[in-house]
Length: 171
Ligand code: SF4
Image (cartoon, rainbow, N blue to C red; front, top):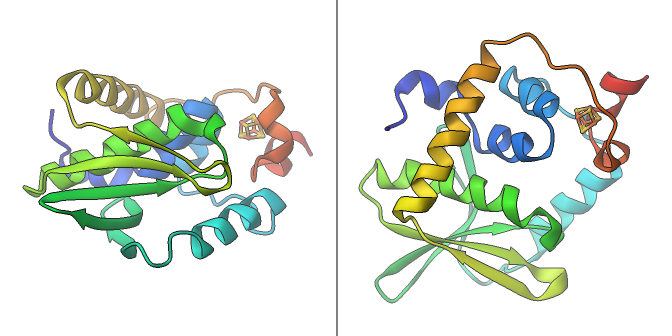
């Protein structure tokens, strides 16, 4: 299932990442609500993005609905890196990277994803294989349905205290 032009305007890497955390966060992201930019957890995340792997490759490449953290070549292989604060977000980062790999593959660029956690010195490679394609397509399908729905009710969870939308949900 390829991304149509409308999908590229609607579905973004941020919405995919949010969906893994919270349906309401994804719904707000799909509608282009912005999280509180002075949220300290977002500030730390931006600092790590800016100051990690500076020598590695080209940073912050933009595609429709995607801002790739870093991209470089190892021999014949193109690597797309997603830099994270912690390995706790591996599953969301995996889906976000798969979305980038899909956008690239639809532009005839074959790439491998790499989740990079500089503070833990960890990396995890993500392949653009059939199982991962299927997993991503299922999430995109659910996001399309979510986009057509009313806002889900907020449900308190531990990430709410760090979420840039917490004022929206809980004030
Ligand atoms: S504060 Fe909690 S319920 Fe609200 S968007 Fe963030 S994670 Fe979701």
